[in-house]
Structure formats: C-alpha cells, structure tokens
Amino acid sequence: MSIVNARDIMMEAAKGNYAVGAFNITDLVQMEAVVEAAVEKRAPVIIQTSVKPSKFLGRQVLVAVYRTLAEAAPIPVCLHLDHCTEIDYCKKCADAGYTNIMIDASKQVYEENIRQTKEVVDYCHSVGNISVEGELGTVGGVEDQIKVAEDEAALANPDQAIEFVERTGVDIFAPAIGTAHGVYKTKNPKIDFERLGQINQMLNGGGIKTPLVVHGGTGLPEDYIKRLLEMGGAKFNVSTELKHTLIDTTYAYISERRDEYDPGKIDAAVKDAIRGVVGHWIDMLQSAGKA
Ligand code: 13P
Image 1: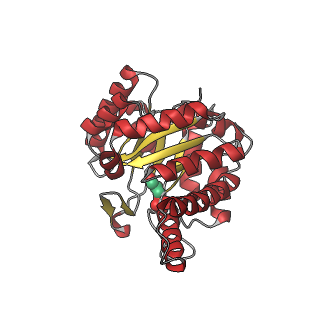
Image 2 (image 1 turned 60 degrees about the horizontal axis):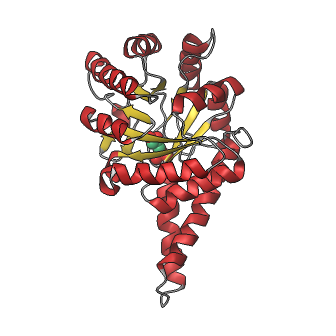
Image 3 (image 1 turned 120 degrees about the vertical axis):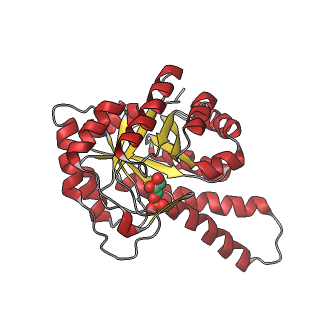
C-alpha cells in the first residue's frame, strides 16, 4: 500500500536534501508512465492534475486509476490537485480521494487568500490524511485556466510568508520566487534563490515544519535546480515538458508511419518518452533510491 499525501514524502525529502518530482498529467497513459518511471528509480513521486483534466477525465476515474497503480507500486505515490481556484472543487477532490490539494487563491488580496486557503485546510484535515498546498505571490505564465503576465508576477514577501503559513495551517507551501509556468523566454531566468533560502530558514531552520514547493520546473537549467534544492525546494512541479513530450512524440510517430492505424503503438511510444523525461527529473532531484 503506497497511497500517501504530499506532506509526508516531502518531510522525508526536506530532511534528506532531495526533492520529490511532481508531474502534471492529462491522461491515463501519462499517469502510468510517471508511476513506472518512479518505480524503476525507486523514488517517491507525486502525480498532479490541474483542474481542467480533472474535470474532463472525472475525479473518480482518476482516483480509481491512481489507487490501482499506487497500491501495486512498491513506492509512495501521491495524487495532487494543482492550482485549483474553486474551494468547492477542492473539497470534491478531497472527498473523491486525492491525497494533496492545492488551493490557489494567490490572485486574491492577502486576507482573502488566507481565508480561502484556511477553509480548504480545515476541510481536508477533517476528511482525513489529506495535505494542502497554498501559494503566496504569483507564478508567471499559464497553468490550466490561470494566466499571470510575467510583469504582474509578485514575489512572496518572507515575513508575510511565515504569517500565511501560520494562519492558514498549510502543510506545504509554494512561495513565488520568480519561476514561471511554461517555457522560459530566456536561457537565464531571473530566480530569487535567496528568497527561497530565507523563507526556508525562517520556516524550517529549527526543524522541518512546512516543506517548500518550486513551481515552473520546465526549462530550469540543471545548476538552478541544484541551487533550488540547496535552498530548500522539496517538491518540483513539471507540466509543460510532459505536454510537449506527448505532442512531439505523437507527431513524430504519426509523421513517420502515416499508413499505420494502431493507437496502442502511439501510446507505447508516448509512454516510453514520458518515462524517460520523468526518470531524468528524478535523477536531477536526487530522489532515486529514496523509496
Ligand atoms: P511548468 O509547466 O513550467 O513545468 O510548471 C509546472 C507547474 O508549476 C505546475 O504547477
């Protein structure tokens, strides 16, 4: 049985100076690929769905497949709802069996962000062993239906971050530090490593209490990832890279075999490619062999 929430595996990661990979999937082939890659690497892993694929595939279907895969896997696997702005849908996914919920009220004013986040935390903790992620400041780019222009992206204020975590009771915390969803427009994105380190020191310096999340994994240079790990990143979110892998692999496969009509073979090629991407991330995050 390896159904876990995000907090428990991230506490281990934060103590052991590695991070858990959190991979956004939009279909069941990708979900299988993520779990297979993590099993091959013996790494704890987080499967994520944003709200649109969750509603499209159906939360009960996703949870049923997740539970089937996780129960058969000899590693801990979490199912996370990513960037949900609707309190009601957060609660529905908690009821359905997601094990980590992200309420994203980061576009609200500070007090409203606290109010909404706390409501979801209180609900999830009353339902069972479900952890909750909150965000302060905003991540640039586009994830699911949420668009933030890069010049609107505000970084998390460290003092406010501590107050936010205390007042909401979130289990894991995503401070905006300059990472962005989607493909970075520059080779050297401007990331505020020190801000992450400072927040980590203030929150977890006396012993790990609230592990930190890094959004916008796609396109981060490897040396940035290493530095973010050192500064306390214990969960890295990767979405765009998986979407590109799915589409590019499908396109290449079909282009080369225009007369073949065997969808199973396209799925197998996609699964293979996604497994490779996830395996590489697990190596970069140093979580291989940790499960
Ligand atoms: P990318 O799409 O940049 O990988 O970001 C993913 C993410 O942060 C999802 O929450």
